[in-house]
Amino acid sequence: MCTYLTEKVDVEGSGKGATGWFGLTEASVYFDHPQHARAEHTVNIDFLNPGEGPSARVAVELTAASARALAAAIERALAAVPPGLV
Amino acid sequence: MSDAMMAETISITGHGGDRIEAYLARPLGDGPYGGVVVIHHMPGYDEGSKEITRTFAVHGYLAICPNLYSREAPGASPDDAAAVARAQGGVPDDRLVGDVGGAVEYLRSMPASNGKAGTIGYCSGGRQSFLAACSLPLDAAVDCYGAFVVGTPPEGMPLKVGPIVHLAEHLSCPLLGLFGADDSHPSPDQVAELDKVLTNLGKPHEFHTYEGAGHAFFSVNRPAYRPEAATDGWQKIWDFYGRYLAG
Image 1: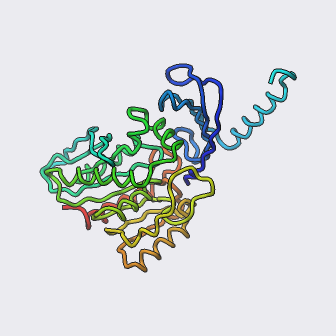
Image 2: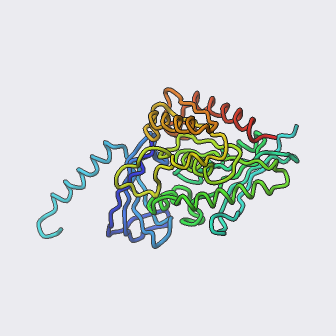
Image 3: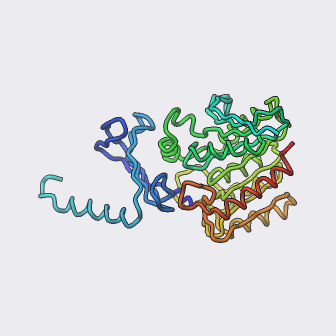
């Protein structure tokens, strides 16, 4: 199925796309059919900078379990940062 | 009979007089041939959509697939263009009708045209095929698992699409619907509801729902591909277009 649901979030940082590094301004997260992953549905994350055109995009397609593991890993990494740095 | 065909990227006039990219495939004979507008799925104007377009030409139809994301992402790769279109809320309905209308006009103006034209759409394009058939004078339309013809989209959905079953009274041509029993967008209940609405309105239509198939069962390069359903679905399409579009 196409879920059509898309979570959008403003982000600050950089991503490396097909033509090199660029600044990121937003990310889209949605659960839908992947372009490439060999699964019927995946969590698809696009890191974007619309101001630099459609190709300013870093895309990942993760299985639901992988996406949850990644989210938990991000939280663990941030929790381990010494006080005062974040 | 010659089976020669050709395919190329062209530019056509779409909604609001905009020039948009399109992929044209046509038999090289003199015709007369029916015309098919292929409405690509949400992942965009990709290789699979172009292959489908060529398949119609091989079977004796003038076929054209407009790039519905031409404006958002000219020249971008199909997946990048689809991501932009998705982030912006998808293709507005009025623009879709204008773009498909332009494609239909292009096909009907071709010297080899028999004057007839139909649509076929997949995924979001299935809904858009129904929308076009309710908005333009067409000869046949095919809806492959289009969601939200009936049924309210989930709360907070960013896409600019809503149910369009209220347009059914304006359906201008026979409709072929091909669906997967395991799909939830559209669900079998939603397919049954549309079937009932069209029956009550006396609109000619035929629906087929395949067991063991879900959404996107025609997509040969995706895990959702279901060869049995897709093979039978293609036969249903040739039979349907053979009656309403061919020659």
